[in-house]
Length: 251
Length: 251
Image (tube, rainbow over all chains, first blue to last red; front, side, top):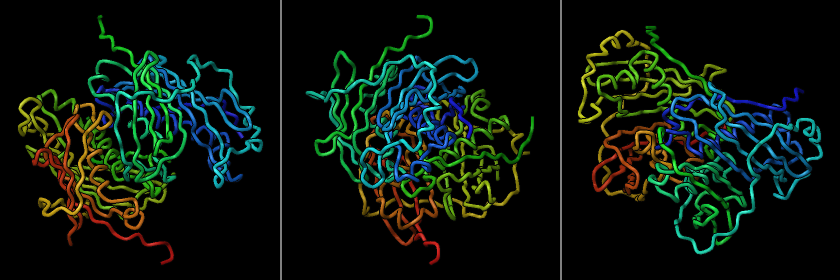
């Protein structure tokens, strides 16, 4: 088996995948991250199929993204992924996002994946894929690790959302990228015109399903925007975002 | 300039793009259709950039899709597009969707594109790209043309939806594929588990924007499911869907 420590995918940002700012939408970046992670894990023989042999499943636990800028309309960009750490219960997988033509670094992402048993949903033991240790790379990822996200106190923005057919993925849960959209929808178009999402963290706590109605509550403090998506009071996911003003060229 | 009468793109259906039935979601198929159409038009020198030189813009007016089955998880599939007809005001562009490995025909789509003036939003004259006539293909598209969609009388399913940040595209309008999701969300997960969307038609009437709240009303009759998305009583888009029961292998 090839022990390819790094894996790269290239994309071109078509108009259909652009957001209102003419950039790669953060939720689409999360979809790309999931795709590249899956392909690299498959290439290393530690993908969903291999874990399923042991009755286990990879579950995405956390993402942190930090961007200098997002790929723009028609820009070719690349995601390179590598494993920073691995132990019996989880793996840390990082990403660098670059502009494919210039090689400019656009940003980085960190993800944490845990393995759970398909039936019991309890943490699984990854000892059987111990060879993964040989693929750990010392390539640096110069962004902060995800921190613990505090609960939302005295929310300033409140919404509810009921999950529909288009929100559900092949595992019959809500699509991981869809949570990101719902969280970012707490702010308006004007905010994203004026500011760029510089850092975004999400912690997935439990799975939501078709027909579930969640509360989405956000609070703005010195630390950024904290958002909690809760189902009957219990957290489905927690997120922290930091926005920075967009500086016009020439300013 | 190459006068490539047909243009083909290949895709692989990753888990992230699958719907709850483990198939290519119809809205994702619409995104693929838009992407392939845009790329072919660019290759023919009649894309958005060329029309912009005359102060014009392509606008998608209608889509009709008919599928025998949808691409499945991990299946490689291809879209081939060609122009069936062209005149001063619009072009008819068709698509065949095939399974890339077996070459099996999965379905067909018909689209109608009109050109409008960017400023006046009135129909534009396409005489300046008359060379497009040389690219008309006689490849057959064996599905019915889009018919006129009657308004919804006595709706049986009513919902409302307010467009958020994640629904808006680079032109600051609601994303064309997002309307398809909102329309298909009128039915539940169980309906799509039991039945497949065999035919889907959509007619785009006017543009909706960020913050607009639309009424979504559907009526079921012998002709299928008619859905109207209206903004203050005026139609944004109209749709007709036909579902067929899924036949299990071996039945």
